[in-house]
Amino acid sequence: MPIVYEDLDLPAGGAPNAEVRITLVGAGGRPIAGRVQSTGKTIIGTTRLTYDNGGITSQGIWSANLVSNTDILPPNTTYLIEREVGCDIPQIFISVPASGGPFEASTIEDDPMNSIEPSVLAQHAADLALHGGGIEIDFAELSSTITVTGSAITIANVPQLQITVPDLARPVYLYGNLYVATVVGGGTQDVWSGIAPISALSGSQINGLIVLNTTFSSAREAFSTLVQTFARLPPHSPGDYVIGASRVTTPFNLRILNSVLSKSTFYAVAR
Image (cartoon, rainbow, N blue to C red; front, side, top):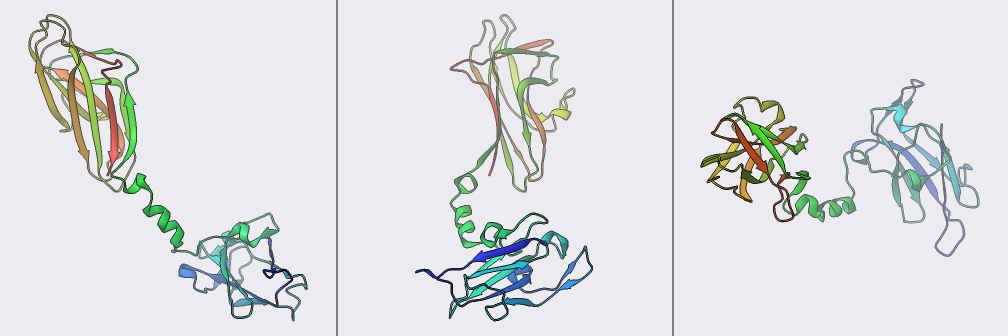
């Protein structure tokens, strides 16, 4: 069993007349009985270390051999360490590793099961990534101008504009910005842009996520025509998503532009 120790000193120096109490605790820091898996024994009660029983030396150092918390059932237990000095009883909770040591108690300090320290809550509340209006999940942009081709109505995925959405218990919003140009002489046609799971991009199957289109004349190349696409994913909608583009002519050729002034992008934000 690993050794846990601590060196106690008074503010102005010298060892205090202390009693150290060690108790196995569970949820909320309440004492429990714990079964040691490796030996079949049950840990219960409180170990008291004082000057009287030799548990604390005249230098204020105490030590104890403690069973690793990973060897105890139920899981996620900790040890409550109480140091009574006069009317003061400072407390800490520790989780003892399976091997190694000796460990100074403060180096293996932990929170009791099912509790969060107030300081951790304050840090969480101040995290703008969680409470500042959304956090970016994934982002993609073209590295250079590309051409996508296909047949009327079908959706051609735009290489590089693919992102991954993890399984989140909150909605995720997908935003696509395509700067599109058609080939010269292609006539006036609708240009469509949509968002779909990569697995759904077959034929005209776009899973209902196509949402916007624009119309322009391609008697000459239409430069930097912005086609914007948006989709809301409900909670727990993980997967790989891609921007798709199409026209109502066969075959179609669409140039997806990427320049200093025309950035084609695709990104996801969780709210």
